[in-house]
Image (tube, rainbow over all chains, first blue to last red; front, side, top):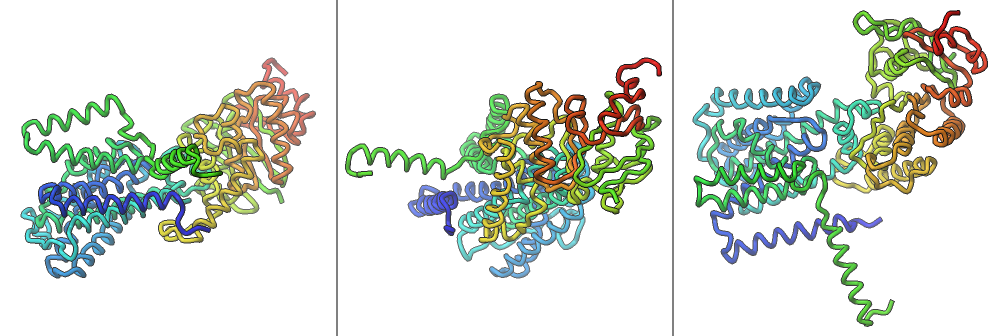
Length: 330
Length: 254
């Protein structure tokens, strides 16, 4: 058996090329500090979107509480990293965030994931508000004033760190979805009664998707805390959850490449419109309305954009071209 | 002892007894029919047996084990599988995925094995696919592996439901109106298919069906349900001449 198949290879190339492209653009100075900030934000949004897409698009459970888990990650890194401003401190913070968000998601998921549709949305919304208000009223989180002076992770540039985390989170989530467990999770979205009758423990897989989604959100929160130095509870309010939801819906519920595209498009749009700040929200909203009218299933629907297919098409074309000029005998 | 034994099973929806006091047994490798007019409680009985509903009274014993109150997925994993009257496929997934999902419980990939894509993952995945494909081949669906389930024709969707149910390796298969909406030719094909399933997989089949030619043709025993109550039980020939059954279906006094 081959260690790396065609599919994996194509993605590997995409990862390396995009990494080199970003580094190249930064080194020649096209991507200045301002754009780099946008880039980091896009990266964080991708991580958030991927996690929420796992919950909404794959398991089919509508969650409006993603910002709550992001807050847990942000405050974990904020508190631990401020106390111990070393690389170890940062990763300890991330680890704490992962554990806490995982535990909270598990405790909340088991009772609330029995609910369906709107009810679940309201319940998850309530949970994220509880998390936010708890943070606002706790001493260790410094209440409503938030935590400031969180050191910037500087062992490697932040853009690289975010890039690495985007890759890791995406690989974990996509590999999970494309496994037996992932298929079982998809079947819940498709038809819960049938899934259960086929021996799928629907509660288990719903909770699993919810926990994994929450944990990825906490990673995004950790990166956010370190990059922006200051976190206050209002950063993680209902509107933040909606922002993430918009990315998922815009890209296509159930499509991970769609989430990438949506996070990029919306991030770039946001950055370009920074100069016309009055019009910004209007154009941004218009873009959303237009996409919902003309493509209600999102940019990519439930489809995935496949680089390996794109490559194999190119290779086929190249082969055809090669054989017609007679230089290759076949 | 019978493979499946149901004792005075009752299900009340408010004041309505959808199923009341039903006794029923299934032996190993039997093909049994369950008939009755519309609204007689046949599907409710299936839902009770597969755990979708919890019985109000009575008990369901499978190989001597009480199944009452167990969750549907637990019951499914014990070896009771079913199809649905109103087709419930995973519509947006491929035909192959539909079958693989039903095999989820018999193959363990492991969370970390699949996330890290260890060699074991590919091995398990390959053997799952192999089994799924051979199942699809028996039902002449192997050309459509990559097709979305919703794009199959009606007859193919019905067949896929059966394949999916068989993929759980059941000991008992409940078929809920498999011939509904089929033309006579398709029904004849289905008749042959049901026989083949029962023989090849050596399982017990309980069949709900309105098409009498099919039921009388393949079933060894038949139960007749009316208004939630069992009104007759016997071989097809006995059922055909049973006055209570004739009255239930054709009306009139006896």
